[in-house]
Image (tube, rainbow, N blue to C red; front, side, top):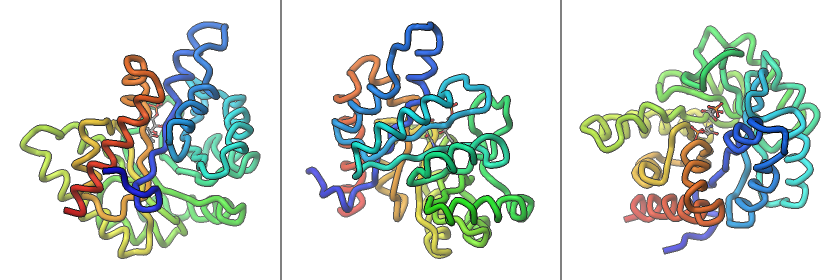
Length: 257
Ligand SMILES: CC(=O)[C@@H](O)[C@H](O)COP(=O)(O)O
Ligand SMILES: NCC(=O)COP(=O)(O)O
């Protein structure tokens, strides 16, 4: 059963790992913009990137090339992730994406593995959130699924939170899965009650996606990269995007049943 786009959790494809492979030679392939274009043509609702300060994968030029590409896709969203106290804000000011996702990563972090903490992070985030919103850029804060943190996330001015989903992904298929789903559902409800929208991401894949979409209320967007690009090495970008959209739809149907 295919659901109307308006009611469906949006899929934003993170193309970090296409850039990672590209960077291993000086040949410009695989193309990051071509990957994004095929994913959009296949029905993805957005593109996400995380231009880390060391440019291990997404480079500054990729940010501008994807910004240019997305001008031809007015229905699609551009989501740029990063630490606003490091290099993120220059990209936000230059491209004014639909969404900025603030992630509290250190410069040498292996990958993202935790969210913001309040009240410790309140004062330094407030002006940065305000600047993004003044530029017309929605702000999403990368957060652990802690209900008690959601009101404070709203208080710094965020529009949404992105729930860090690695703990759920690690528990999927195990006895701990149900406990994790309950934790994420509670955190999402607390965020909704605080007036926040709900995004989610990290280690989501087409196997663990349906149960998460079915159980987490108000899920507006999932941003998925590592597993999706790994699947695309086998299936191709277009078939993979369709498979992930089908996984989202399966979760939405389960939620409604
Ligand atoms: C914020 C998050 O969970 C991921 O989007 C993150 O950007 C992954 O970064 P790497 O692709 O560098 O592991
Ligand atoms: N915000 C999560 C994201 O963009 C991709 O995370 P992952 O699927 O690469 O773990």
